[in-house]
Image (cartoon, rainbow over all chains, first blue to last red; front, top):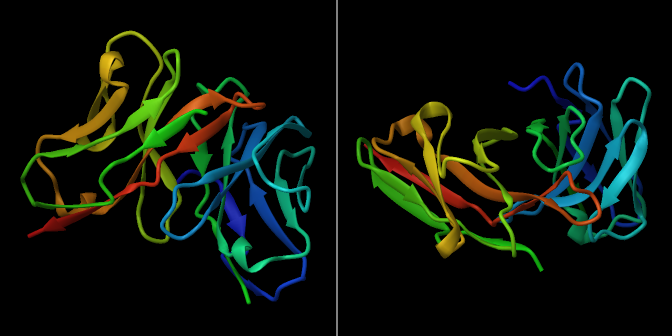
Length: 115
Length: 115
């Protein structure tokens, strides 16, 4: 186990609703990245937060937003849910993880189903 | 655009047999390369990583990988597979895009192990 926790583990929402997913980083880690993993696919990078600031974003629309708190835990918010948002959402924490070399430690994920 | 290709969607090997999982990447310079494993219901666990230096990298659980620049490959190997190795394996490259800390993953190779 990595020490990265995510909540909830599973979630069912309907199209158009909003959802908030939470991630608690491993102790001492100041960087959090979020990934979306659709069924049968590899994880896709959504965005990264470093010391409470967004530090890069993948090819996701603005209705995907995030936040990192002073204790380095993080939230992923998705507005106006669409059916294609159904996926496993993974967060990963690291120490100063802005160069691409640092090991990212992944949580178990939140499985979101949009009906 | 940078990309990672894992040509084999599903591989079945007998317990005790050797294993090689293929990974090819597209990038102009030497990337940061990673192999992760994902067991059902679990997050991703890092097996090994390569940044520079010796092109043969040792990882956890008896895995190793070899970086071959001429072939743009980073194949994962294990000399003798155990039943507990059944999982999905993802190759990833790091250090791209607006955030240097994001990872680009392949679509994964699912490994089944026959008794």
